[in-house]
Image (cartoon, rainbow, N blue to C red; front, side):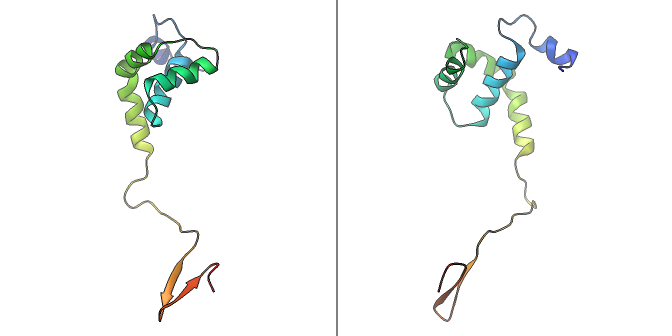
Length: 98
C-alpha cells in the first residue's frame, strides 16, 4: 500500500506511480539508456517515449539515486572469497589445482 506522500508525489501524471517509479529505478540502477527503458516498458505493453522517461528521471531521479547509493557496500563491509589459490615454492595450490 502506498503512503499518502508517495501518492501526492506522482499526482497529476498520466501514468501510475508504479510505472513511473519502475522506469526511473531501472534507468538509475542499471547501465541502460533512456531508449532502452522505453523499449523495456513497451515490451510490457506500456507506451511511453524516452523523453518522458528523461523528464521523470530529472524530477524523481535524485531520490532513487540516493536510495540505491545507500544500499551499496561500504568500506568495512564483510566480503567472503569462494576459492583461494596460492603459490608456495613456485608451486600452485588451492582448490582445483594440483
